[in-house]
Length: 152
Image (tube, rainbow, N blue to C red):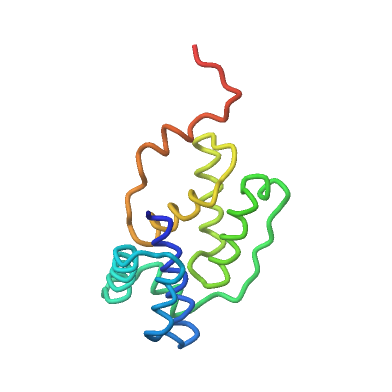
């Protein structure tokens, strides 16, 4: 469910940046299959981050999006599935993540021995680092082995 909420947040940030956030656009979310609960949670996350007086990553990303391009090395490309790579490009285009977030994601994947970063992992990363949502504990157990290790 967190992954779908991040999708709604990305959509909402895009609408805010384009100044085209209205009720008709909002109704399109229901047509895309998002539930009212998911939409409520997503807008609650956004509201909490944008209305706080303390500086945060999301407010910075929306107020001053970077116009730089991040190039991926072949080694970095190996870490991402095609779907995850497309999500990262979209998140960077909107300004939700920056180059250093990608570096953090790759370093974390290397540290836990992750073979490839999937789209769901990218979305969980965004939920965790941008909205302070705790990472599900089962992911650390499930994602810890690549399949070529031996357990003694």
